[in-house]
Length: 436
Image (cartoon, rainbow, N blue to C red):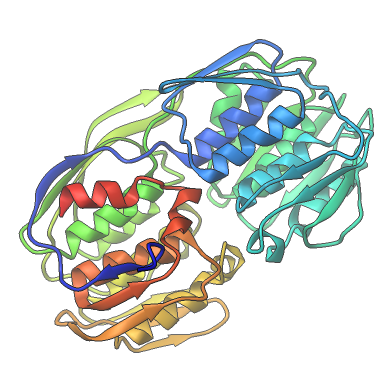
């Protein structure tokens, strides 16, 4: 038997449970990289130990940082703003687009040529979105778009003015990291995206100013001489929670309490969308921790789900959760429409295309374009056939979407590459077994 194939043969039974999901991946990677920029000891509790975060740890160790784990505590002593770069250095970002793109901003002041590589999936993802603006700082690159590529920075990178039009937190953070290593003031106009970097920098007492408007954030970043260490107790990841939100909404007579989740407003698009569709979701025990909103999410089975013409204002804050939102649309009354989602096809796999393929296998009618999808919902959707999911570039979110689909819609499922969850949510199946 191939242990990497996950099988589902029956729907989940009603449940009433309380769970903790793993820690926020975005915060974990950012904490690792900013800690490497400090020369003093930073400490994190509950750092996510997924493959993406461990790849970040391995990269900063190659750059001279010292890392120590002790149970749920991680300590990092970095090299300050100037890394100890060796000749012929190769950094492997694995499957992580966040890590790969942020590293390039981090390396802007390296005068030695550094090679950045990644796995098969990451090597198909476009890096020009960061290499183009990083050239304005003075960096040189051997490749225009794809990994592997070489970066050669300079001792004194120039501050820049830049308009980030994609709504990518990865691009924004990459440029902010590079700006910290200049000797002047950089100005970034950025389309709305996740705000973790700006919040974390304020905790580090970095001179960053943010003016927020309806559609854009105007960010000013001054270069610094040092970065303070940071103590951080990392909350749970809402992107990981998303699968269990949808599992509960689409299950019979069920209730789930998900504890201690990062509910930063730039990440809660899925909650707003599901509520509009009739999802029974409440946030309780809300508090602020180091500038981030944290709370518990209470979700219950939801009847009479309705379709949605999804406002594009939620696209950025739900970009990693649309696959499971599509499942809710498939079980809702009416036709749901999601547009301006071309960014989904620049993830670990072309997720918009794969989402449509999976829905088709489930018997759900869709109309898909390069940046939109219409989903013809059926509240009585029941799957009786066999479905085998393979060849999706080992995308962790595709795997987890299919698991939730099998448990809530029925059918006999074989889903390849269950090890893909190691990149972001290693305990997904373990938590699932506790609920089942």
